[in-house]
Amino acid sequence: MTMEPDFGQEEAALQGGALYVVGVDEVGRGPLAGPVTAAAVRLEPGRLPQGLRDSKMLTALARERLFDWLMDHAQVSVAHASVEEIDRLNILRASHLAMERAVAALPADHALVDGHLIPKGLACTSRAIVRGDALCLSIAAASVVAKVTRDRIMVDLAQQHPGYGWDRNAGYPTRAHLQALLDFGVTPFHRRSFAPVHNILCQAISVSD
Image 1 (cartoon, rainbow, N blue to C red):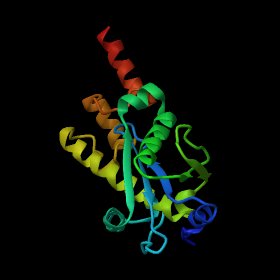
Image 2 (spheres, rainbow, N blue to C red):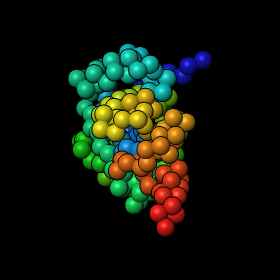
Image 3 (cartoon, rainbow, N blue to C red):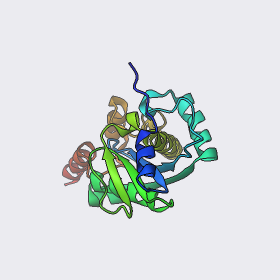
Image 4 (spheres, rainbow, N blue to C red):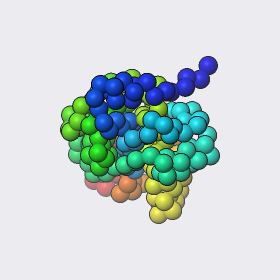
């Protein structure tokens, strides 16, 4: 049975005195290439979208439709952490940095964060919710916005670097992507701190020596 997120966490925060409650989620921890992208979304209590759920449970068409609705009817912020920041900070800290940037761009005084860890740089009260994208409407909304935004970025990058299939795999380590790394090498958009990319770079250095 598919779990439907609701507005209960937001209502509890509002009843507790919060004025601006946002849901926060990120996408892109696992890929070998591209940024990690976070979104923060504030929904109006009397204006909630139909069919909203965890982005992973939606078709691409449904995500696009909900993305358009959210951009028109909700307060939305999107932020990224770059490949350079991922390699310098580590993927967890970079993911949190993207979340912090997304929340900072909205008038938020309480954040509902997907997962079990709260980014240390949030400038408002917050609550971490495990499986929040399946339980909480605002986090589900953030998951949709982050997913659609990052997928579009990877489609654009695929035009610059054809052969890796980023328009289909969004930079995740599919068999085809891993083979393309061996065939074509590492691009500036690959995360050098991730093992498959790092190993190829080390092999290249060994061969050149």
